[in-house]
Length: 152
View (cartoon, rainbow, N blue to C red):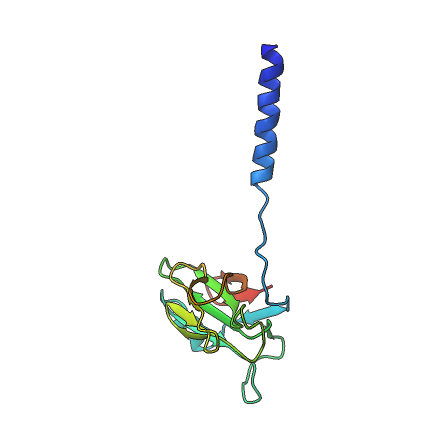
């Protein structure tokens, strides 16, 4: 009987370990869209400093490489206060439209329409005021030593 209980405990431990290794994806009101931004010019220098950010929004007057993909509402790349790089969509998850984008004044991003405020201090992009219940849609961001690349 002791042997059976030991094996049962071991099996449960293995199952719990496997289950805890699964990454849960955050649901977002913002639809999935391709993202590819590779910093250029002074943007990389700006983003080397903790607390700085750069927004990439396609407009009729913007001059970006043709291979750039801007997500749903544009892409915010920022370095948090712990010196880690992050990227997220600029569209407010409450409004979920391409025309209402958050205003970024580090360490916060604020929706001009619903008033939701998102805390960027440590990279979570979590709501801290207003009606928002979910984070800004997050993208991958990597600093390779010469550029920062945001992708999805």
